[in-house]
Length: 96
Image (cartoon, rainbow, N blue to C red):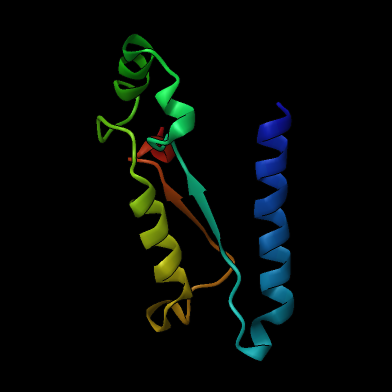
C-alpha cells in the first residue's frame, strides 16, 4: 500500500510541476516501470517468475535497457511537446 501511494504521489507531483513550468519550455514526465529483470527479480524462483509473466500481456519481464530507452526518449528533442504524462513501460500491464 505504501509503495502504491508513493507511486501515485510521484505521478501527481510530476503533473503539478509540469503545469507550473510548461510556459518556460520545461517538460516533466514520469516513467512507470513494470516488472523488470533486475537483481531484485533474480531472487524470485522460476515458478514465481512464471506466475508473473503470464499476467504480463507481453509475456515477459522488461529489460533495464527498455526503461533507459523510455527515459532517453522523454529527455530527447522528439519529446519536446510531451509533458505531464506517465509513460508506462510494463509490457501492457497498465491496460489491465
